[in-house]
Image 1 (spheres, helix red, strand yellow):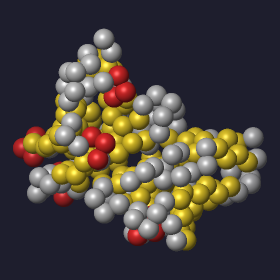
Image 2 (cartoon, each protein chain N blue to C red; image 1 turned 135 degrees about the vertical axis):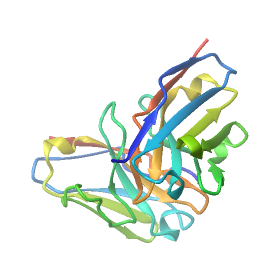
Image 3 (cartoon, one colour; image 1 turned 60 degrees about the horizontal axis):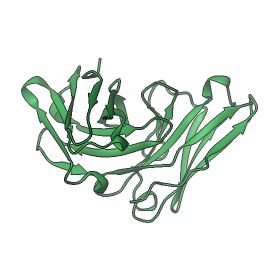
Length: 109
Length: 116
């Protein structure tokens, strides 16, 4: 499985909403409802913010939401805040393991 | 509380092997799969493999097949990832993570540096 495709960077002003796409194939994103999203701050371990396409772990802000259509999953961050500036990775189950996305750097202007 | 505590940083020469440990606590070790993920400096997350501590079943990314072995010792609730025939491109931070509600809990990471 090749890495899932994400935009290299997305930016927005505080308070705005941004959406990050994650495109795979019918063998990963499109084939299972097991897409998760991770936020990675420099030097820190990844943190799950969305799992099973739309579910949010307890303690994660409801400004983060996930969706999927066909072979593309999306993460939306609403009410963008300075602390949201980080790298974001999608991840999909493949039937035999997982595959991560290429990663998206989110910049808060 | 759930914790995954990994072993310390390693420096290895090309061709050597490294074995990273991941000590789990705060939950029933055999109830959840453990995944291993790595991140090289400036690069993205890369899945290495997984194991089920209850059954002993494992799965590896094709890129690492034949070079990686993931095991566990349930008596001490510890998972291990051994990578052989190291090359400079294997220099990265290696993480273990518990698979439930996504990869919901992560270790602190272990830096493996490979250079001559």
